[in-house]
Image 1: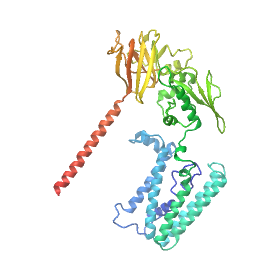
Image 2: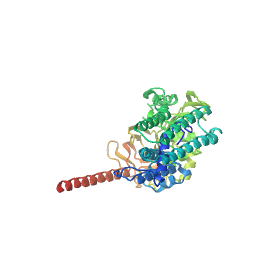
Image 3: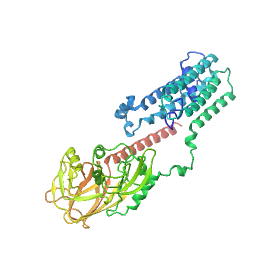
Image 4: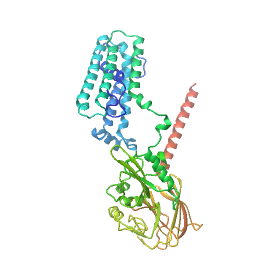
Length: 488
């Protein structure tokens, strides 16, 4: 709050030293029983109510921003509407800076109307608190190496902070008030914020060069593009072992098995926890690996080497073409714990057997699949076109993460309608959860064409609710306009 960029490159709670001292002055004036004219009575909200609101907002935002260390964020995430939609308690820092800015505005508005003695006490208290904060941080954090800057940088930051703080406190301390002093104080606020944040906005390079990908990301994109014309129609995925930022795939247009967030579905996350990497790569269709490992535990082609400060990043290509979907003849029903162990077992042939939960109608199948072909086309992020050919039929495993809402659309079998089930009553083309976290569905023999579409009912319900809400708002608004015209 008081010292910018001493813990991280960014300072989300920092509103400037003048802003902080003005906010503290507002608190001093809020507690004063006399000697201050708060604001004209014509304002919409009484000043004490407004300042009390910003104080409560600052305390609330700071408490929430502590995350698990404060306890409140976990409660809100669990029970408060909307709080569970996003991860990251640090977003509450915006509430703190906004509240401090509001208090600073109140302080600037009331200082010209405050008694000189009250202003002197506010300047003395705020200045003493600022000096104590700078000294305490230097003694307890900087000297023990617990900050993000060297001693020289900290001394410069502390010097500028104290000089700006002294100038602000002096402007509050001096008797009288003039428009010129107000403009000087506003200029001091602006100069302080420019000094604190200009490094972010004025970083070297143009806006285009700042969004250029890292060399590793560019190499990954090129490697995926080179293998784009694979047998099944989709390129292999990428496994990024903590070497580049998580959401690089969204910008680069590649599919990374880690996704763009540390949040993952529980069953899918099990494949990343003490699970054999080569088996996970096989299940998820990985062909490109970005890792700290110079050698993988199997054959691979090294495509690139990127030295880092403490180690080296290596880019590998796996020799086997990735399988984004495959047909098996044997299906077993097992509990998730047993499925996880079977998938990790190198003795289990994933090309011959798949696992589903017992509640699916085709929980047990036993057949042989020969000369099967699978072709995939990505028509949209939520739509996958599938073409399969097999003489015996079989169970298709698709390397997409299962969630309720996946369904088959527009299925044809040898150019005609597809049967719904076999002689035993086991359903065809019914999407199930297979191999713990992937998609699976039973196919009839012959050439089968269909689209796999992710279309959860919750989205349609949300659209209906939003549409009904807008319609109700329109009716209310139209009714209010009609009543107003009748009164005229």
